[in-house]
Length: 391
Image (cartoon, rainbow, N blue to C red; front, top):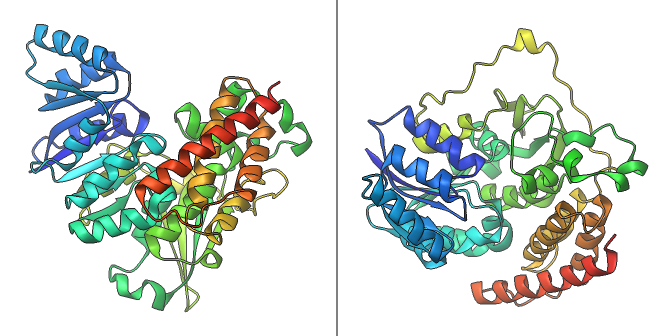
């Protein structure tokens, strides 16, 4: 039996993780569940899985949750704050850590899990985007391993040779597929009028607001390009993005002999989650079977640079000094939040990201403290740009 901590348990990845765990009570035991602020949902999860610990971001909310759990006869101990996240991610009892906290807030806990030798199931792409070199070093020092949970990177892992020493020897390039989001066929000239509701209406996936907006701008794919660089050791020129609106082919690998290996499946996050939980074995995920005859057709197209200008920023950042990727991530988080609050237009997200990346000063960002300072300064600069662009 494996013991797991789920960071971000009340979000979509965390919820799907718990649904897969519920199918296999003989294989997994929940050690800790962590959420930012959704105390009601965390309460229900604690009553269902009886973890040793629960973590909330706010101390008063944690005390209230503790009282509610005690009243319900649940022995789970409730902790609070960032340090508590690191503690439940690095506890000796834990084998697996699902890192599903959205944004840079999950970085410290991911690093703590890596340093303590855990199997890190990484759904928090910002950990690699912001501090890829630091995270890989921590994994090497701690003796743990990393399994990507993004459907695209899981597909790449499933399509690569089991012998990792063959990755560079056998592979020509990797192809990350993208749905194209809700604006794949929308006139680029009309994107300035997009509303948050429209941007969050993804045609294939059910996701949180921030991730949905990133899909609409294709900044999610830009961040995944950076992830792929660190996960698979691919140079920027070895990474390609292809729009595939059905979201059935989750990604593919082109080999030197002309072969193409791909992973297909329904657009359901339980599949890569189950693969990460049981790797290298496979277990039931609860996802529906794929019926290609019913699907009927699979379409592919190149991304439109005018419609999705942010995609190129990932390749720019990878060719810049260490820290540029952190600038791009921090800027994007601030810009997306401002858009969701209707302070800036949809097209201003790219404008802010491009401006801050172009002016980034990040040559000496080789430590967590330096990256944290760069992140803080970038957010301040991005907020200033939001004020200037406010509608």
